[in-house]
Image (spheres, rainbow, N blue to C red):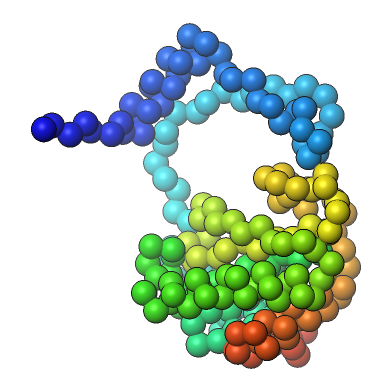
Length: 215
Ligand SMILES: [Zn+2]
């Protein structure tokens, strides 16, 4: 039995361009969704051909800002850690009730995790959600991993306020970018409260005393 060879990126692009030429783009349903953040018509951008992958931040563990922040006792980046994992605060200010990153302490991407690291992060994910929902007025968390920016694995963990139905679903990160940011003192205090609850549920230590960056 001969196995079919999956298309290369260039073949995928060529085939997709041919489909676009034949039928046009599919009509995206989003503009009719109540969660879509915008009014009015949107215009599809042309699909660009594949290019060389650009290196990600901190590639190979050199010049990794996550590793550097984790090793700097004066940084406010890490709010909770155990031997394997850490919870970090975004460097940008946020609008949502909760935005954090769950990361391995060691520089590794998803497929580079050791089995023990992967197992611990698997244990921690539900405990992080429980710590968030025990502490804040949110129904649950969203968990995302894009992996296109920094190489050091960082799961995005985000939550919207309970009942704010307009923020449900896949546009939540977009809403976080669009809504005015909360004062950092408030979002950090909430994050530390979650970190203290996480320490009760999962062990580890809370990193309380780091400075708060002033704008
Ligand atoms: Zn790193």
